[in-house]
Image (tube, rainbow, N blue to C red; front, side, top):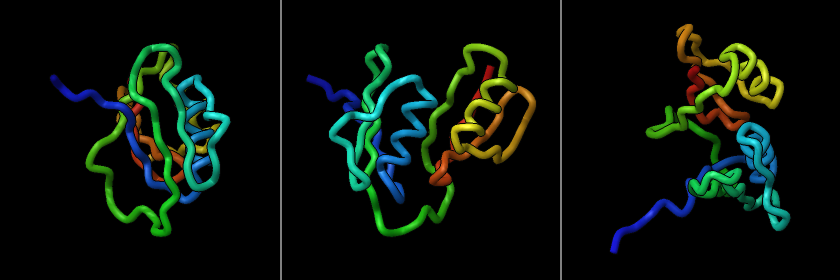
Length: 112
């Protein structure tokens, strides 16, 4: 037997807030049983792992050791703008790859 990735876990200030950002970014929903202490987002129909969010008392203090690479379905600039409206910030723009941070400061990349 082998293992599979059940969920990817995020430490955050507010689980519902973080889950709402990622649910909107990925076209999914926050599970109805979520709270500010813990919440999760199921994958939007493609069978990937769930995203699990748990409140922790400390703030993020260093660069992520792993991160998501998102592929923009349409225009890269339009997707970056959409993610900014949801609360993400641009960390670095390398023209064909944009490094962003979610509202808790977790880095991720967006590419065409």
